[in-house]
Every structure is written in C-alpha cells, then in structure tokens.
Length: 205
Image (cartoon, rainbow, N blue to C red; front, side, top):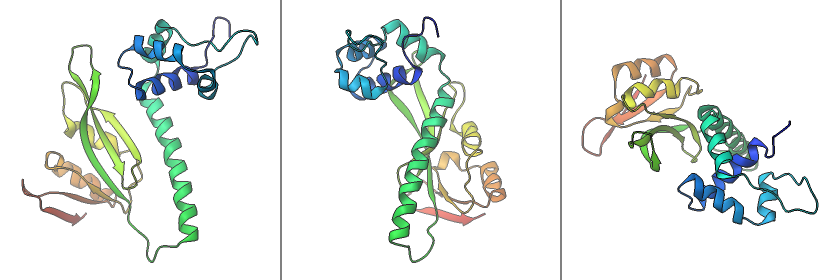
C-alpha cells in the first residue's frame, strides 16, 4: 500500500520487545528500536526495501498511532489463542509419551492486578482481571472499567471460555450468587475463600 512503510506485526513486535527491555514511554520504545541490531529487526518482521540501506524502524509518531488505533482486546485474544494452542500441542505430545494415571481437571485461577507503569489518561492505573490456567497460560484478561470493579468484569471474562469440568478459583470479592449460578450452568467447579482465614471451600455446582 502507498505510504505504508512498516507491517503492523513489525511495529507491535518492536513495541513488545522494547517494553520487555525496560522502555516506559513511546519515545523510549522508538529510541530502543532505532538502536536495535539488524538481526533483531529482521526477526521482528522488518522489510528490506533497499539492499544498500539498513532496516528502517518506526518513528515515535508511528508507534503512537499504531498503539492508539489497534484493538487491544482483539490483539490480546489473538496472541493468547496462539500461545494456548502451542501449549496444548506440547502438553498433548508429553501425555502421549507419558500417559497420566487418570485425567486431570483443568485448574483456572481468576485474579485482578493493577498493571505496573500503565496509566489511564486521568492518571489512574490500569487494572486487569485475568483467568490463569494451572500451567501458566493466560486464557483471558479484561480491563476493569475505572468506574466499576472486578465483580462486573467476572462473567464477561469467563463467558467465551470452555470451562466444562474445570476447577475455577477466585478470591472473596468475587464470591457472588450470580457467579455460582453461572458456574452451575456451565458444569464448573468453583473454589473461593469462605472467610479471611486461609481455608478454602470447594463446592460442586
């Protein structure tokens, strides 16, 4: 396309690598990319348009426009789906070599955390509610609206997931009657704290 210099995946990959390397602003992301070696740029998806010139990196303005316009939920779902598929394939291969004595239930922990270094326009931190599988795979995550809380984000977070037969754990804040009824309809076992103590209660719904 005319005027298009960088593939979308390339800009997103550079931004992710820069943040992992410690970049805390869009300017820092662009500066990190500009200093990155050609080998890394190539693996991130850079396009070599002129053999006599090195790989080009996006400017701060380009990084800003891309990150402002990209659909964060769609991107998160795409990356999460890809990682989950890879993990499932690896686990299936391992189980073929070493079959388990009995089928294991999938364990899913739901918890909310504020994202370090991420701020909204009003200065308040970004808070995410996530569903984490026992093997470390994030099945889903959802940003909690600044004017709401984790309770309202709980059901929309889990609705798209296939949790039949899974054990889902969450803290006392999310122990709501509506959540229990939803779990019952989906044949999910839920586990939540019954008090401020460390004991937990497990109920088959």
